[in-house]
Length: 315
Image 1 (cartoon, rainbow, N blue to C red):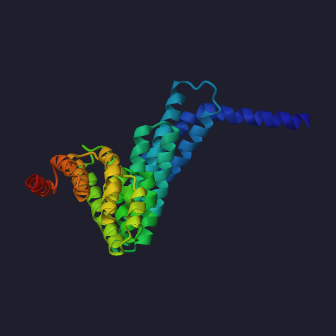
Image 2 (image 1 turned 45 degrees about the horizontal axis):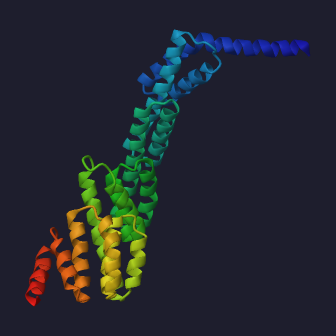
């Protein structure tokens, strides 16, 4: 029994010695395979180098280079396999390889390669979902684009397609959430995408409001607005709903909240116009004039001035 134990110990020692003596040569073999585009073989060799490195207490300079290089080039090899799969339009295989590249890059604290490969993952999902989207198979498009958006939320083309797929599927709130997140990106870098998202938000919100107005369901409009993440839009819709209900007292009460939520002069002007209308209906003409004077931008400037002129004549 003792002899067997000694043999096992000897084997373990030999394995460690192999790791210490051959790790550099194995790394060089991996590089040669990577250069020859034998990426699967190279990955296996780089993995062996990395694993062997854990058994070395104090690697020398050459061994450190081999271990660090293996951690870098294994990511590159998975990336190359992803590119090859993409070129063959094998999107699932490409996604798997780019995802592995991103995960390994994160593990080895290579932030640049991690972000690059996550971007590629998003692009693969975008390409995979394009056929479904163009064929108006929005359920499939949502399933695919959602995964891509999770991998790369800054792929705004895909995010806009995901939002559109939600809207076309009568999933208004889900579409609004995606558009709201797009609108919160850096305005300088994503100005075009933000404008497109805002356009979708305006159009589909108007559609939803119109449906509810036709049903005379103003409480439904208010409930819908309460679920929106865009406070400026939500409060404006709520003010309009109270106007539809002819609840002028509530409009006056709610106006301060609505004004505080607005981010633009046009938004504040729209709220002031509605406030002025409410005061006018209540025959509180001085307050109506004061509110209308604050309408300085947007589509209601001329209307506000007409109200002011009319009320001034009355006085």
